[in-house]
Structure formats: structure tokens, C-alpha cells
Length: 428
Image 1 (cartoon, rainbow, N blue to C red):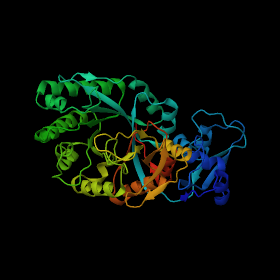
Image 2 (image 1 turned 135 degrees about the horizontal axis):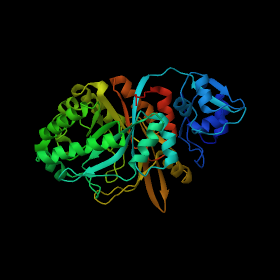
Image 3 (image 1 turned 180 degrees about the vertical axis):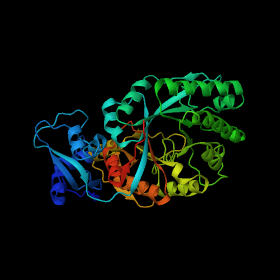
Image 4 (image 1 turned 30 degrees about the horizontal axis):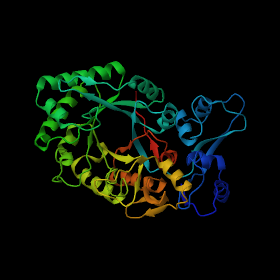
């Protein structure tokens, strides 16, 4: 994989011609089909096909996959413009594989709300090992609050060979994490057992593969109660071979102050669960000053600490699939930056004549533009930032990555991941 940085006057055609690759393939795996135009400073990945198939009359994606000893998901990953069941035409080129050595195998989790666009979901699933459906809530007596429509997502995920994971959180209908809910469960054995049995019933009835628990802003005094809760939950899940993930705030030391961090004991929770997902994002956030959502230097600090507390092969590193658009000047307590998709960011840059820059320390792209007399600053993710983050997974021997979230298109970043790693799948 080669990463090319767009210059003034470049076009998709000129870049494809310069590197001797197909213009349509370049457009497809970079997610450029809906972009109004190229932006100076934009990263473009160049993938050179190794093995290709030329479609013959009567061919289908399934028959081509079988003929080349591969699987349908691999074909779909290497040809993002194609979809399952699509009619092929004679003479069409299908990429079986690209040149270049892989860094290794990667388990990939993606989070989705039940209202995700189904076409987008179908395009993302071939790149995933797990699809975690956000989110089940609960009441103080252990009664579940059920998201609408999760059965359909479970079925779609399984049809792609992707393992559906149930997520249980303390998120309320108001969109905040409640430590009153966690306290109620920690301090009431009957409610706690009711919650566990209700979750087990849902997993069995709806055919979930595993469970992810995301309790945030737990009272520091209840840190051990949380460990005990995860331990109790895992014992009952393990009896039915159901894996358990626990989502952890991004810490750099055991004594890190703050209610978000103090109740997440990496060593104890990492040992209590099967897997840990480190939520390495939200340094740049909607109410904070403009900066990268997941600066590489900050992510590295968290991972460096995490692997001293948790077995690396049981860690999933969070990766953001979004950015923010700040209106300047930033005013603490007043500024409120909307989140944007990574492909949306490039459209904003193009439409406002911006040039993408790259911060080497944060390992992240950004740009500034003016709109209605106000300057804006946008930080987002691209192939360069994703390649650097995925490199940490190799460097530290982590199990995989977890995309928060897959609700917006991010074709180039998925293609970057696919170029670097073999995507793992589990037996369903």
C-alpha cells in the first residue's frame, strides 16, 4: 500500500494513471464516489492488484470466490464497490488479492445502533469479526431496557459470518451514564441476579454471540464492587461459552484521578473479563478545545500502560470513525462542536476551498476554513492516522481494534485496515 498526498491540480484520473492502477478501483477503495472533488493535502491510498479475475458469463461472486479458494467476505473487502448478490457482467474485473505483505491477523469489532442504514451496514460487515449492537439498558430492579430492532441486525450480521455482541450499559434515555443505576445493581443481590438472568435469556433467545459491558462514571468507592460484578457475570456466561468484553476508560496510570477513571481497575477488570476494549478516543470532544479525537501520542501512552496491566492478546484498542468541526475562537463552557463523518470532513474541505494539513505529533489530519465570516477548525481521521494507530496493535501485540462507531461511511479507513491485516472470523 502506498499513501499519496493530493496536490493542487490532481484528479482521480491523473493519480490512477501515474500509479498504473484502475481509476474505478481507486475511486472504490478510497470511498471517493460521493466526494465532490479532491482536496489538496488529502491522503489517497494506492493498492496494486496481485490476482484478479475476469468475469465470464454465468459467474457470480460466490463462484469466483470458490474458484480462487477464497471466501465471499474477502472478495467484498477487496472490491468495496460490489455487494452480495450483485449481478456481474462479462469482462468485469474482480480483485482477488492485492500486493503487499500483511502485518498479521486482526480481530475487528464495530459498534452500531439499531437504526444504522442497512446498505452501509452491508458494506461494513465484511470487514468485521464482531458487530456490537448499542445498547441495552436496565432499571434498578434488573429489568432490561431493550433497543428496538436488534433482532434484524443479529440476523444480518450472522448472514455475513460476523458475530453479534450484545452491549449492556448504564446509559439512560437522557443519554448520560448513570452511577445510580450501577450502584443499585452493585448493592442489591436480587436485582443483580435478575439482571444477569435477563441478559442470559436475551443472549439465548436472540442468538447473540457475546456480551460487552460498558459502565462509566462509576463511584470510585464502588470500584471493587464493579470487579465483583464482572466476575460474577463472567462465571455464568462462561458456563455457556459466552465471551465477555468490558469497556474501559483510557488510563495512563493506576492512580489517574477523575470519576471516569478511578473506578476502572485495569488489572482486576482485565482479569475478570475475557476481553477488554480500551476507549482510546475523545481527547478532542464537542465541548473541548480543537484537537485530534485520538492523538497518536496519547493513544500510545494509554496502550503502553494497558499492556502492563492486561494480557495484550485480550485487548481491543478503540479507534474513532468521526471528527469534529469547531467554530473559532473556542470559548470554554460555550463552544459546542458538531461531530462529522470522516468522508463528510473532506466534502466540507472541498466545498470551502481548504487544504488538509497533518499534525505529526498527533498523527492526525486537520484543516481550517471560513464560513459566514467565522473561522472553523476540523480534525478527523484518514489513511495515515489509521495506519499509525493500527501499527500500535502490531507493536504491542494487541488482539484487535474496535471502531466507534460504524454509523458513517469510512471506506478508505476500512480499506487501509484490510491492506494491513487479515481479518479474523470466529466460529458461529
